[in-house]
Image 1: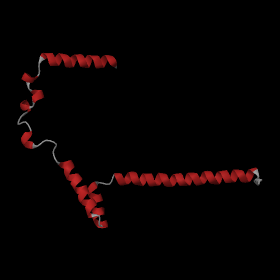
Image 2: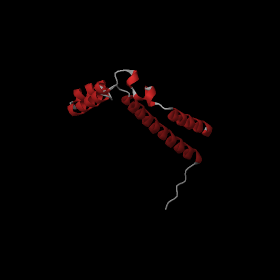
Image 3: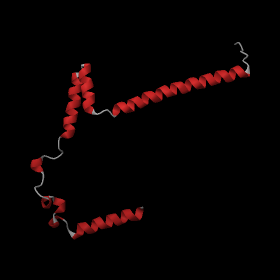
Image 4: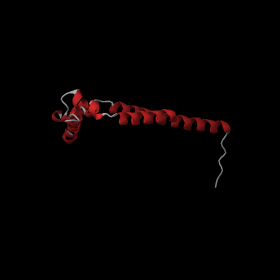
Length: 114
């Protein structure tokens, strides 16, 4: 194995060059990550338009379906109570003193644990 003799000054330069190279790579990765974060913030309807322009109709349709599913109500309007009094947890006859006492006890236990 041959030995290389490198003056200290040159070794310092090499280390500085390598460090600078690592920082430049790191800046590139930071920029790429920033762009990826910005891309996630693009509203879905703009993404669909871009997919359609690029010819990715299946992706556009899948995204539109996802958007439609998100807009659908969680409860069917026909199943919803007509008035607030019809909601079971708001009806006075559904809440007993015993259940209120047990709730109070649970809350007190949780507060003691804090």
